[in-house]
Image (cartoon, rainbow, N blue to C red; front, side, top):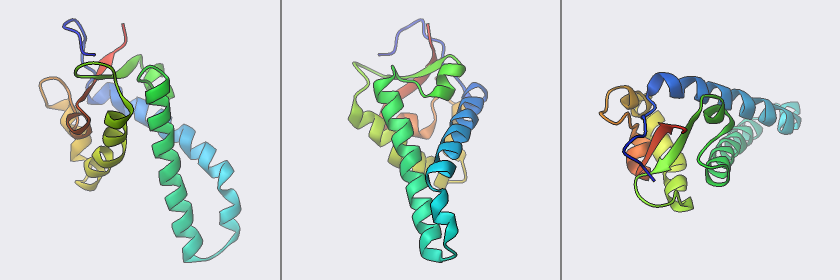
Length: 137
């Protein structure tokens, strides 16, 4: 739940957290899905990309839900995702991390960049999930 004294986390603190999370998921996915590289077929390329997408979504949704609003990258940057009101529930996290981030990326990353320009440093996916990213107390 958002508190009055929370400091909102903007684009430049969220970006390194995103990069660290992408590196972690990339390494895990590369190891787990490397057998698919043995096949030289468009079907396996599609399957690899689909499975990586699923891995990214699972990583973000599960860690944010079960680890106090933080992924490893967010924990390293001392920031976390919080709900506007009440507890951060799974439905809000799913909406934020799937549809919200898909739209944020689909419009050339503008959804992410919004965090640098909105008053409470909210990205598009934060608006959709009714969440904020704040510095951890």
